Each structure stands twice: as structure tokens, then as C-alpha cells.
Amino acid sequence: MTLDPKGAALALHRFGFGPKAGSIAAVASDPLAAVLADLEAPRAGQITNSDLTSGGAENRAVYESNAERLAQQKLEQKRKRAAEAGIDNPDATAMMADKPVTTPPVAGQDQPAQPKPVPLPRQIFLKEARARFDAALDAEIGLVERLVWFWSNHFCVSFDSTVMAGAYEREAIRPYVLGRFADMLLAAESHPAMLLYLDNASSIGPTSVAGINRDRGLNENLAREILELHTLGVRTVYTQADVTNFAKVITGWTILPTVDNPDHGGEFVFNRRLHEPAPQTLIGNTYPDTGVEQGRSVLADLAHHPATARHVATKLARHFIADDPPQRLVDELTQRFLDTDGDLKEVTKALVRAPESWAPEQGKIKRPGEWLVATRRAVGRQGAIDRLMRQQALMGEPLWRPSAPKGFSDDNAAWLDGLAVRLESANTFAQAIGADLDPQAVADNALGPLATQETRLTLARAESKPQALALLVMAPEFLRR
Image 1 (cartoon, rainbow, N blue to C red):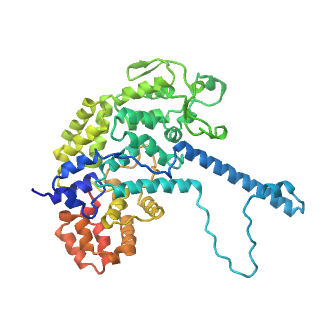
Image 2: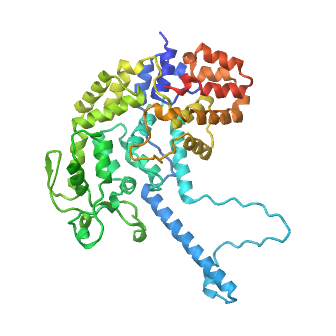
Image 3: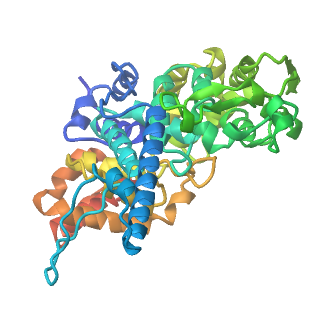
């Protein structure tokens, strides 16, 4: 049997999250087959974590927590005002009876600092982030997890807009990552997190019942981003009139208000009172007013449009292969998308099998999140999730917090300026664990035959093991994929 350890190491970096101990040897007999097998793994891309709830449940929990906190603050203010006025306030006393009793500090004694409670939104964020990071850390190859990250960035939402950002990835991206693009498109655009992020939850048809009765109107944000970013691509076959008409089509796509829906608040609902009651024409097709089905029909047609196929193919090739991907590869992926009705597993197989995908040059810089996973896989350590998320944010890629609806850039230039911050992170990481590790052994695990002679000499000349580890994870062949 002929082994290909260099191809194995390249495959693990390019298509996954980098090698773990022993993984180069494990796939060296047939790197291509190993990568393709990642697509067939049971429950590929799914997270089964009993601690995680639905997006709607997270939304309702935060609402209830905020309401209780506000009530406590008002109650405490009422009690304080009563005490200052010397008035016995039995109502406040009774309402505070079930609150924890604290012993007042003794004068002159130093009191231990009490840690501030972690706000519920932050707790939810860290639980979701931990599950995501662990899925990438534990993957044998990591291709499916890379696809989850890719599509989550393509259909990005922001945690700053909704606490449901992590649940959105579990509910709208993961179930469809190896399915049909049309299904993922519908799941993403109708998810409450997307409706909140791009303001469609408050969009109202101008001549709808609500539009006539209220002083609010149409919002085009979601319609524009679906056409420009999620499907057809910038400056392709649509016009501004198409954007406006599409915005009218998806009026009424909103969420149940949490204030008076304790069981289903924050979930998707089609509200006909908000929906523009008319047929609409987009890109030469006229769609009758069939309520929520009108929007579904438009999305289905967008998912099957040749411009969408090319836009998706180009983004996939740019993410995995090169900033300026080979035209033959883009053409092949475009045709595979069209031939398979947008079957994302088949498109991914075509990407992995393409000869351009196995070029020995490592042309793409790992994004901060990928690099953090790769460093922990290389040494077999997990890392505290709150610290990891702070580091990822400092390096310019705060999880579920893109600066714009287009998501984080896949061009190398966007990440070059952040390499200095990455070096600081590497030093901190190496100082914490590097004294107990053999840098050459870590290099064998993490790079194998990809490690250049220059890198090997640099590690050997390092003044300490931590310094050598920091230099290793900042080596060009580790930074790139």
C-alpha cells in the first residue's frame, strides 16, 4: 500500500480544521476517500446537546429574565424610597420576602469580592459557542463542520440583534448543510433570527390592513440581501424594482411577540394583516398573492436560478481553494449545482474531487476561528470557551457578530493586519501549556511532511519550549490551508 502523508496533512488543513495526534497516519492510505467519508458520517453536522434549547425558548427565557430583573429593580427602588422616608412599606416587604437574605457587612472588615452573575444572554452565547467549538475540535476530519461555518457566514445573523444566533445555526444551517440549497434558503430566511437581524419582522405592506391603519411601512433590507448576498449575487439579473417587489412579497413574515406569548413568543408566524395583498413581479416572473406561499415560491425560483448556482460555486471555491479560484473549478461546481437541483453534498463532492483542490500550494489564510481550533487540535487541549471567544473577537472575527450582512470576508487581505494580534494569542497559548510539550512532536502531529526545513530549524533554535510552540502555530504552513 502506498501512503501519502503529505496529501493527508494537506487534506486535513484544507478541508478540515487541521490534524490531531495520529490523524495524518490514519488517512494517509487514501486522503481523498477519507475526506469524502466525512460527508457520510452518521449525523454529520448535527449537535445533540441536551443543555441547548430552541431559539424560541432562548428568546422567551431572556425576556422573562429581563422582566424579572426589571421588577426587582423597581421593587428595590420602592423599598429604598420608603425606608428613606421612614415609611413602613408592607407591600414591598411582602414582595421581597422570597428574595435571598444577605448579611450586612461588618464595619472595618474586608469583604471578599462577590463575582458578578453572568447575564443570561452571555450564558446562552457561551453554551452555544462551546457546542460549536467542541464539534470542530472532536471531528475526525472536520469538512462538514467547515461547511457549517461557511454556510452560517453566508447566511449570517448577529447575536447583537438576537440571542437566537447560536440556535439559528443549529436550526437553519446544520440540518440542511448536506441537503438541498433551496431547503436551507427557506429555513434561513424564515428563521426568527434572520427576520430580526434584517428587520423583516417589522416590515409592513403599504396597502395591507396594518399598513393602512399604522404609521409604519415597508423595509427592504431582507429582500435586498437575499438577492444580493444569499442567492443571485451583486449586480446580476435583478433591479431595484425587483428588490421592492420582493420586500412586498415577504411582508407578514414576522415573529410572535414574546410579551403576550409565553409558550410560543419569538417563533415564526405569517401575519396576513401585515402582508401586501397583491401579485408581484420579480425577474420576469409574476407571483399571485397566495399569502406565505408567495414568498416560498420566490425563494424556490431564486434557489434554482443559474446566477445563484454561479454565486454559490464561486464562494465555495474562494473559501476552500483560492481568493481568485480557477475558472474551470467554478464552472464545474456551477454545473454540478444545476445538474443536482442544488444538492450541496454533491457540490461538495465535486469540490473535493477536483484536481485544483489538491494543489500543493497553501493559498488561503485560516480565519481566526479556524486557527484557534487548529491550535487546540494540534496539542489535544480544549481551552476555556470564554477566553477563546475573547481571543477570536480580538483577532477580528467575533463569533456571530459580523460587521455587515455580507458576513466575514474570505479574502486573505482581510486577515493580514490581524496576524500581529494572532501572534500575541499564540504567545499566551504557548506560555500556558508549552512547557509540558515537545514542539517537534507537536509539529509531527500538526504538520507532518508539510513542515518545512526552515520551520524545523526555527523550532530547534527556539530559546524555550513555549517559544517554539508559538513559532510553530505561527508558521506559514500552519497559518494557511
